[in-house]
Image 1 (spheres, rainbow, N blue to C red):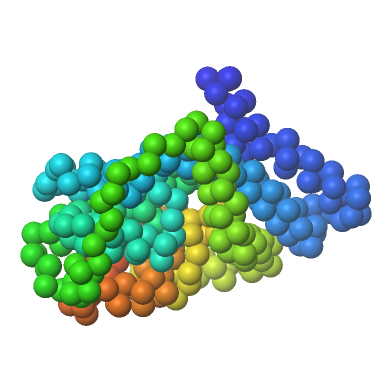
Image 2 (tube, rainbow, N blue to C red):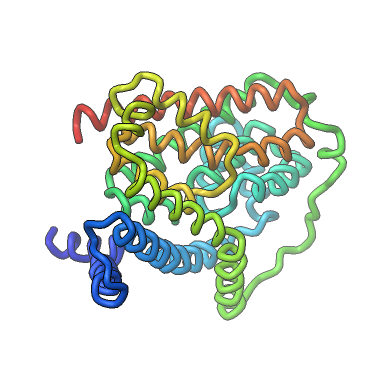
Length: 334
């Protein structure tokens, strides 16, 4: 247990980095950690470096695994199953595709056009931006392993339930006709060498870092401001753990934003430090990653309003239920 705790503190929470940045702020910048400015600068530098270190390492490992599952192989795997089994597999495969909600939509189109049931493709569409393997490590680094695994589990459950409901409602007519005409190529699958897989993983790291760096900086900046400049009493009055409406407000507040889990984690971390319930903070994260307005606009181009409304309702209700459940759980057991 002591060895595991040491690894967790030094490699995930990066206590060594925390102390290094503290020395930088105090000895080089001449600031105090008890002052707002000093604490904010420390929060920003420490979280940015920690997130990018973890993100680069995790994306490399996940992308190497992902190189074994190109879209055509994924389609073939899912095509061999049906019903809830296919939904579970689609949700699990979504965890190894580190995409934001907008990036997942082209794959959704490809899978649907290839003949996969729309319930299966929606399980993938919900899971892919909401849960990925990197989020487990990052959540554990910021919170703890229990919360990390619980978040991933409820995210997968939401994806499976959402896809199953859509499948049972037989809503194929609610998908725009051009989607079915846009057939996915089914040529011979390219076999990559080990060197090519490593290069693919490196390219993915650079590509994803280019896409998310701004959201990470914005997220950490907002988190630093919340952590050090916004009074705890103000945040608690709106999103406090004792407020019944907090999860609703957090979910709705996340919808107009556009970011992935890496940009929202620092905000959630700062909110919890200010007394916001765990479930409320996670509901905000889920609202941003799964229900962002840009992704809904893109999705509206490939599915009709009825299906879009059902998808929105299922995911929103699911997120709210998860948020309240986490608040109750944390109140009783944490």
